[in-house]
Length: 274
Ligand SMILES: [Zn+2]
Image (cartoon, rainbow, N blue to C red; front, side):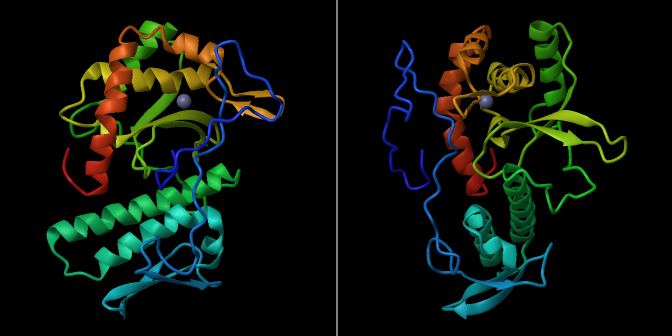
């Protein structure tokens, strides 16, 4: 789904092949409409760029009818940083307000999400994350309601004979996605798998079977590597989808994932408690 709710057209891939069930593997990242590098999507927060800045952002209040102006590092002018710029705009709108306890917490959360998004953009481009060079993102498996270490251990024992070696954390990545990455331990220099689970699952309304479902899905990414078929990256191929369905609460998890998770993520984006 695109950011603006425009449905992408279902199309037959250029090689003209569809499989037996009409399933068209579609692994292109979600489309982000080209946003202006000059201002936020709502047109209220203006962006300026500095070639001298690398790992910091600044804002100035009262630029346009009380809305702030944000100074960003010059490399963030590139289109792929659009999502990060939107977060910076949201951050600035809060940062220029009165510093109440609640507002301070929101500002802190937005700053974290901003740098995590920037890191992810670098990672997606195949470059080392800038903000976390030489250090790891915080690994926090204990959530407000659920401990991911326990869930991972149960899934690992039940579905992988305890053979998986990976770490797990609650994610703050904007958009509420769960994902799997390979990271380098700055101390040992060794690569390890890191599973990050959407915070939308750390909720009072989230049953354990749903968390276990998404953890199982991310674990499968460790054992079923990405295939390249006719130049396309196939992340969720047929084998992946077949194995995914072996999860005992697959139907219940998918239902929760489709019906409840989007509501929880919307609440998080509006800084509401889950
Ligand atoms: Zn996946």
